[in-house]
Length: 626
Image 1 (cartoon, rainbow, N blue to C red):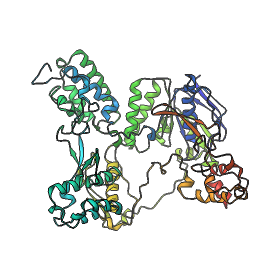
Image 2: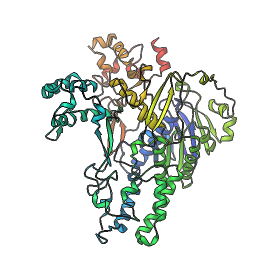
Image 3: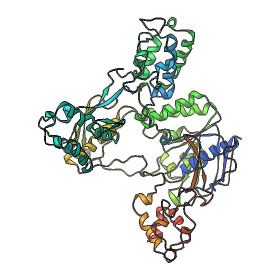
Image 4: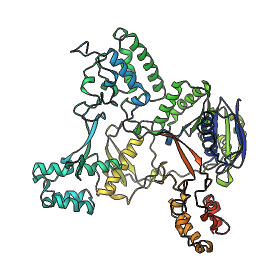
């Protein structure tokens, strides 16, 4: 079947819609936020594509299906590409390990690397990989660096007492009592007048049964891991044993065309390609020539994706969302798999205009090898290049959830839809008066000596009482400037009353980070609980006559507490792990996804159950409770 046919899609905002999606094309699903486009793409197409494939091989046979649609025909195996699902958190995962380039280089070094002092002494490939026990530098465990306390900067005043130092670090009263029992006799002694062994204990602690005592290094490490900018006094130190090359002494004795593998790991991809091109064929065996040929092709491909500035040792968690998606795209293009359905979630978000064409060409390449590419996107350029466009709308929430357009770009420009009018320049956009001429540049924050990642010791002035835009190519240092430098230093200023490398903090009362990260700590957190109205709603239900007759409290109307379904614990589904990191969800057979005990659903307020209220939109809730 050359198309996907969806009948009666009705999850979230979708209004029982029917539509046909052509396969082997680049399809854009657009619409304003909250219109239902993600519900169609991910909750219907992706989930059913995944589930049908698993059922076909007997894994999900017999599981109850959620009532999200009537039928879907023509669906196939689907791949979801969302920044929150491809985001990496393992600091040991690097560009080189993720792409497999380091593994291939290890094979070359094992085959044709030379030890000048022992021309015949060969090592196995594992010795050239920082991720293995054989290969990692034992001093830094393959990280290439570690953080250490710069005590001279932390205590510049020679007369600062130990007690004053602890006050500077904002140590809690509970820990101060612990320290008092152990070091209290030294509290009023200047730190630099303490005996060396006492200073070492204060800074680095002692170890009992492998556990580090409470000390300054531990305090600063915890602050660093929480995102505070303490790097002025808790500085990153290159490992003195491997000099940042991550691998052990055995591997560092082996050279390929005069270079150690650790040196290659610190090169950018562009530099690495130049190096590989310099190696004469006669230096390599036939086996290694084939590997190097494949490596050069892979690296050229990544450079074409605007990733040439990355080093092999660049840690994956430090990459921007755009860089992460391009690496993911590269891996899938390289696999050459066809007949899949790829679903992307706003891949153009955060990209510089000059980078967009590269992303579009990559998706076209996925399509051209025989895949169907479905993109949830608002970007005008992506919409322009699409083979087929679907707009969900006309507006958001209860006013959305319908197919308002399907067709080509030329047809879309003529369509009388909310987004179509903007494409044809018939939409009216509000304009704002430029206030830049009235800015007082003396009323500002000054960030000094920013050096994170690719920042070249820059100093930046941010005017206050203004909207300030930070622009630049992906990987140019935008996130490094704001998230890795400005926010960390502001956090330190708020906690410790001072910050290194930032001037003008006293001119602001506070700050808030607003990002696309989840706002709740729990996966089951809801907007109602986050903004503080859920407690009031539960209390309202607990005051109803039926609830009082049954001696029910507000806890009986919480799916985190007494009201939770006993089978699913209030989640509404049962999670089945197929591997350690891959799972599928099935609707809870007891509560049928409602999350609550049946008893809690017997209580109604104005003819609505607690589940009915949870399923209301904000607009519906305002009308219901007012």
